[in-house]
Length: 177
Image 1 (cartoon, rainbow, N blue to C red):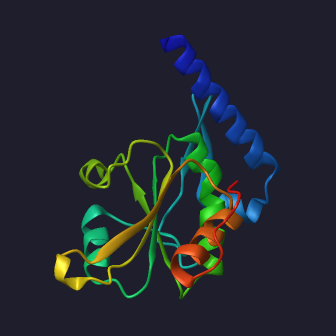
Image 2 (cartoon, rainbow, N blue to C red; image 1 turned 120 degrees about the vertical axis):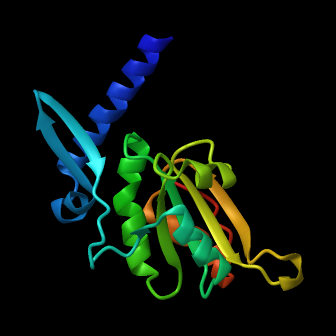
């Protein structure tokens, strides 16, 4: 069982590095950094406070503040730096954030650094996208309403289609990829 898990992770990381090798360097190099240490290659997300990055990395406390004072819909990407599908989706999520800049707020939550918030959000699989909008019934004490929860990596087109459907009255997406 453990050998199968290790093999699966190795295959996932191999696929990530293969995809990143052939992807556009200007997109992937901002998000994924690979370094060699003692003959091993490690890959991790680079989500610094870069001015070009629209999907900002937030802490649990920062997310609480955003949810308490929602001025626009929020899409949360709950991820981990060791997660292969999370690495694959990072550039797609960022491109969707750029396209909907000013209309929808895109944020990233590192579940390893924020386990309490991940637990409160009931994150069970990675990556998980949460689509939240302002709650119309303000008497309930809550300020945000969960419109959709998607577990698994999505492409930019699917992320935008779900935003269009949940936040702007667009058609229900028939296919997510």
